[in-house]
Length: 390
Image 1 (tube, rainbow, N blue to C red):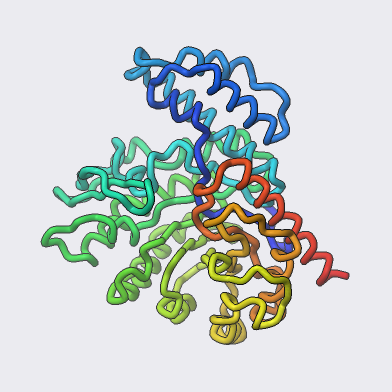
Image 2: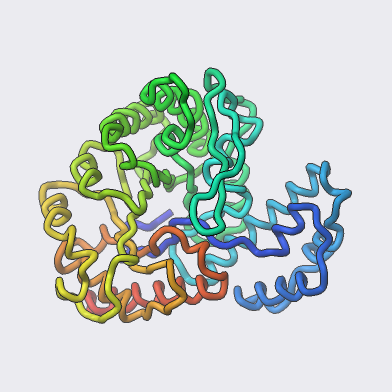
């Protein structure tokens, strides 16, 4: 994977909305003609004129009789990964991933399987709007079935279909610990137990399978300020445990969104082997063009602190989100260009360290809208490259 010489490298950080026909098949529902029409529209969106007959036949056989058909659902999941990779590659982004179409929800995917035990899922609660998730509660010691894995099969499927460099997105240990009801258990004890028992062996499996870019999703990183230093200790302990399996070209990345960044900046230099970082910024930015502080208020708010951070030796590549996700309003390539150029002019002089990515939560947009936005991001990054390279 040769990405070191890519200025304004483009990638997508969060999940995308799942195609309804695949959801219905996974729920063992019979598909109707409108479902197949939606599927044909999806394939046109990604530049393919026909739906493969193999997939049509597979979906036509969906129904209640498939409830306990493990092989059928495994085949559906393989198609989910294949289509997610195809969707992302069709937008033109540089670094793709398997997506999260085989995952019910980011936390539940870690807990609700035959790999991890010691945490039991509770009933659904609302996170926001009409989105729901199931918290877990500690019911015993955390254990990991070494004969299975959480993410490896998904990665291997993605590698089979991807023609571009590939990353793996994992719901990380701090967020799993924060989102688990602990009872009388100490937070640090649970955090380090998750690292030791689950994330070290799982990550080593991914590295042995050939994964080169690992994105650790940590939306809960600064939820409790008193836990931030515990995260630093846990991260460095984790890296020490997997160090023997880390080649020089492996990137360990953290994705944190909707956070208190004043708690985040001081700890970044303390994180061993941190190679990349993705954050949410564009949702708080203005819509006017320009590379001045006045035209880029979201980035200007943290520009001085970040500039000092990089001037004093911090070297991780960073995505300060350039694409807002809470509106269908189209972000133009020119606006994305200016956000990237502002970062390069006022924060980070080396454009190789600047990544281009959306804010987290693109799943809130329809697949056609998200596709257009990602295409615009690719065009905006190209405009920015042209601007700085002459």
